[in-house]
Amino acid sequence: MVTIPIGSNIIYIGDEQLDIDIPAYISNNLVKLPLRAVTEIFGAKVYWNGAEKTILILAAFISSGNQR
Image 1 (cartoon, rainbow, N blue to C red):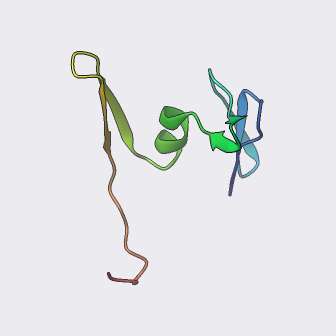
Image 2: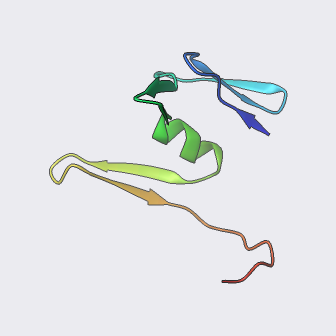
């Protein structure tokens, strides 16, 4: 289980904790999450292309048997 407290610089992954640079926060009734920290927890790689101002997320997805 992953727990992301609003305003905290710590994300809890089970019984472990991960220090992060930028905390989750709420803006205009929407929760904003630190994208890199959250995606890397799930094994994805995040790449920033400054020239194009785009983010590339590479992730291997494992099917749970529910095919679409």
